Length: 166
Image 1 (cartoon, rainbow, N blue to C red):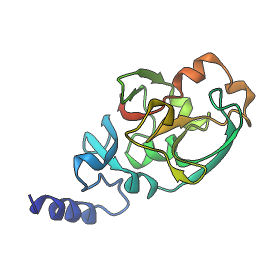
Image 2 (image 1 turned 90 degrees about the vertical axis):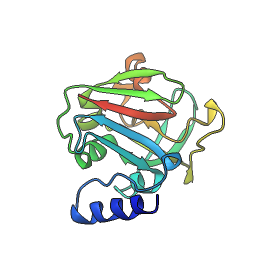
Image 3 (image 1 turned 135 degrees about the vertical axis):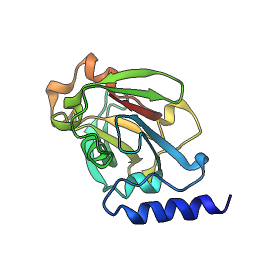
Image 4 (image 1 turned 60 degrees about the horizontal axis):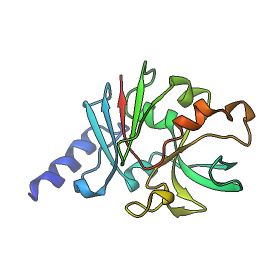
């Protein structure tokens, strides 16, 4: 059991600049990328995900009705780090098994953000659905009124746990 973290650490040191699957226990994993990504599967802890670089977004959401301050990793940055620069298909799944298809342009042109923090505080992980954590895919609705549509709202998945890339 003790060899695995050391092996994972050595593996990540061998590939500088590559997206690093976490060496943490499975219980620390908050997001799994599967499919057409480097190594076939990548698990991210909160720390590993945020290490990709935090962006900030202040926007009104259809569910909160007031400006909220989100921090997280852009979907575009996550996909680049995973080696999936131009995916043909993205399927997102929540903790409750809700699934939705994301459009490739959500990453590139639509500014989707995988929010890990709300008002500077990590979003709660295993509490209530209304907490929407640990990850919530949000869009810049205040800056881009053209994204205020039922189709985009449907893709704004909270309690995100997995993205299948095809």
